[in-house]
Length: 316
Image (cartoon, rainbow, N blue to C red):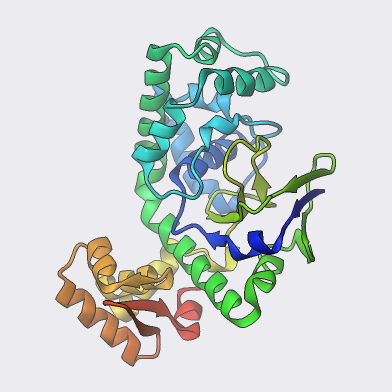
């Protein structure tokens, strides 16, 4: 059991990450690739990626065992959506932290010579790690990133509505079936011995994840900002068939607009995400609003668009 202790200040500082975190999705998708048991949800993706994975990325699989400890330095970002910033943070890990994380990994498996070089902070090895992460993302995640982002956006819309209806504590309690909330402690079922984490006023970043399986997870090393990564609800999973049906109903651009709006966005952000003009983005948002699929609220000098309950149901 993992027990996370909140203060009133922590509850005020809970937030949901603005989108999928590439570094967490890299790590957790590597776990899926290394699974021996069948994974129906990821079956086709797993088969395709495993059969064509570039050789220079296979080193990553040793760093990400599917059971047990994976080095905390691989996921240094607190729910960031930027791949380059995440990789830069990995490569900027202090040597002491690299050595400690990899020593812990070495307690459960044998490390190859390259990993020992990484533990020493060798510059060339760090550079090869950065290139392996970029290549893996391009090969395994970039082709499905629109879907990853769409289902995470839909989950964010659900969390936003949960917060509005039931407050922060209600949102925390409803995150996942393995979670229970008994103020001021959030309890999470775990395979590992009981562990207590005190947030000490730092708050908590909630990171919805496409590749997270079974139960939420947190880093063991508390030198990083507190992050709770949790599986998205599978009933929000946007399958290729469902996506084609939505596009047939609304049109490709408007269907994409609804997916973006589900996570909350301004007109400018909508235009940037869809690669269209601000005027076109405004027109699509207006049609969705008039159809009861989206709502809009003026905030300072911009308009914030979010999916309505009907819009979220349609996406699901």
